Image 1 (cartoon, helix red, strand yellow):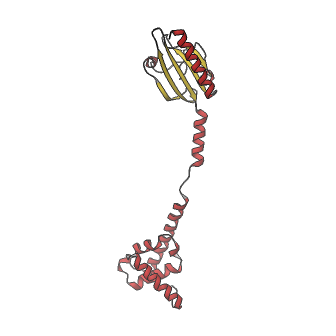
Image 2 (cartoon, rainbow, N blue to C red):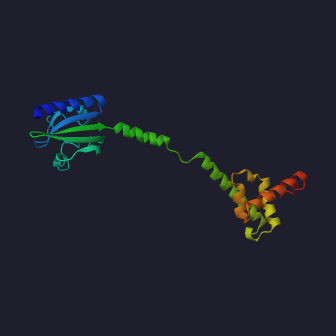
Image 3 (cartoon, rainbow, N blue to C red):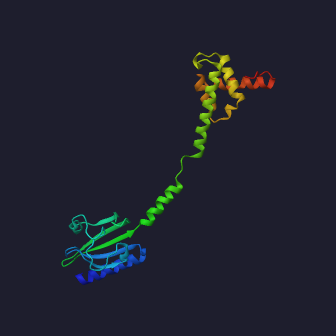
Length: 217
């Protein structure tokens, strides 16, 4: 394909892509054989504020890099922060023939999408999972209640006898502490006994309550 035919082809491609993706999608064709790589065709040029003939790059009027890096490599789906504060996605594809070297550029302004994504992230952010938070709060309340009961007995759990532990179980039982999830395991660990023992004590208390023989602490 000769230079004119290739240029016509690339212009058609650029025009079609710009139409398909709308006004936030800029497409252009550069002449890479000339200094500054002037623009031969551009569609939706308001994205970067350029026109045909412009030698400004996507970053602004004067790029802070050696533009020859474009000559031998394609760049796809790259993030660009423009000098006017917008966020772009950019791709550049080189097309080289015997008497031509063009570059097809595609620049999508995603500034509003990025902002929307940030807003969605903020709106959907949570400080915790409610069920887990409730469980943690319940455990904290149970542990606080358990500390108070142990303090009331006045002995280290490792030194307690059955009567001491029964007293603590009775206090907890009357305060409905065993309605908390995993309460038996927590109490058993704190009192240095097995869960079976806690269940056994609770069963004895239930029998005593049914018989009307529980003494209030």
